[in-house]
Image (cartoon, rainbow over all chains, first blue to last red; front, side):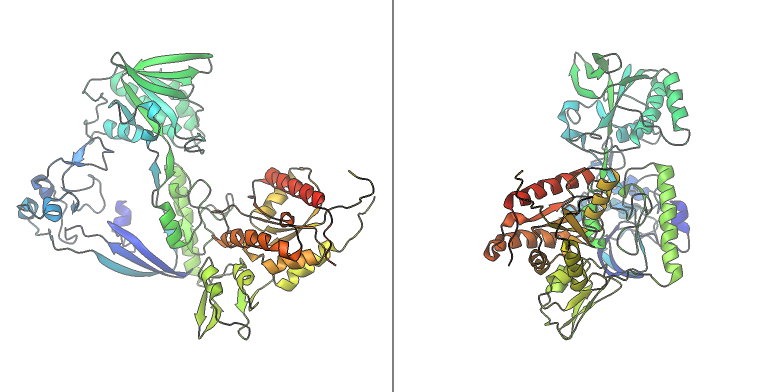
Length: 454
Length: 138
């Protein structure tokens, strides 16, 4: 992250959103909204004095702590944030939200970097290629009440467990129950939401490996009995199988059976599952339950897809141009994909895919010219009545009315032919798929009257 | 099956290049048996199929026309199949005026991975067109 932040050729625009995209491969015009930080980035040194001074202390659920802790209204997202600058959350800041505060942060800031009058600003960018790397969201376990998440404080998600085991996290790295005790037994539940036709049909790919890691951490930090409840252990990466074996050898109990429910009884959380290898239903009492909740498309994926004009797969992630041969391209020229936004994947795969997307983008720009399909549409202007129907139906907005006649932009046109079928005046022709050519095929296939007896 | 009726339905299928055509290809590679009555004409997108093309196809002697595209939301061209989804049902309603039973035109969706489903659809459609008999267009 730091490398990207420092590189002279990289402009890092954080706390910003893409608002609008127009244009086509090689010539995109993107409007970016820069949300106001209320902190002048060029002056802020990241010292954190404003955060210390902030009056609205520890009241806002900290996004970084995955709900296990709180932050102040003025905050630095996390210790390794790039850029390491403070930001004031306008929804919780007393001054910005309610109009009254003594501005302790501004008083504490030696760099005079706090500016409550900051407004959102816009940046217009002209770019040749776009890489979408918008990530993923986690499936909400509250949608599966049988696991008692959100009801019982000792049922947490894998991400929350990560924060718990982090020395800079809310418990200083200690694995504890909600009342601060060290657990005697911990259960990790695989496939919470994933591989389930009622929730997420797909496998989230990564969780088996981090479940193994977290099982190890739980055992290492507390010496507790650790149980993993799984359907299958997916450890297909480089040296992943060896890691799986190692965790088994460390004495983690691995039970092949998806957990049906988690309920509190007599002070313990009872994890109920069928141990399919034993052929028996088991109920295991534990003190802490960690859910491996599934990976799903990020909330704004549909919106981003519409803005950049890319398609989504049936599972809601961005659609790649070809599942095997073009994993980083989309069907829209100039837009590439990297990371979990295309499908759940771990860090090595993400880095590999990102490298691929980067070079595809560079290749596009370096070539300077774009090869397009010859199956594009063009308008027979003498027939065109300028009704504009074709303009409305084109999925790529590749047609515009110029001097009351339709005109197709061959760079944007993908040759789908929707305009051809729509045009009442038969004024648009699709190269290589003309009406005459199609009718000739129809006549040809229907020509043989009698069946052939062999 | 009646012996004095040698009628074999002549069906023309407009299959979109990316989904249904690839699906039919998949059905073939998997050696799935289904009636051979559908003659395939490939288009890039089901959105390419205009009502006039369908009517011309009936006029040229087809007993049934089937348009197979990508599932809604999966169109290779984002929304091309949305147009087809509106055109074909409307055309079905109007076919009666031309003396053509609406069931002779079918619109369905099959992805590149759904060879068996495509075979199933084509089998059902062939049977239906067989029940409806030969289309007299003279």
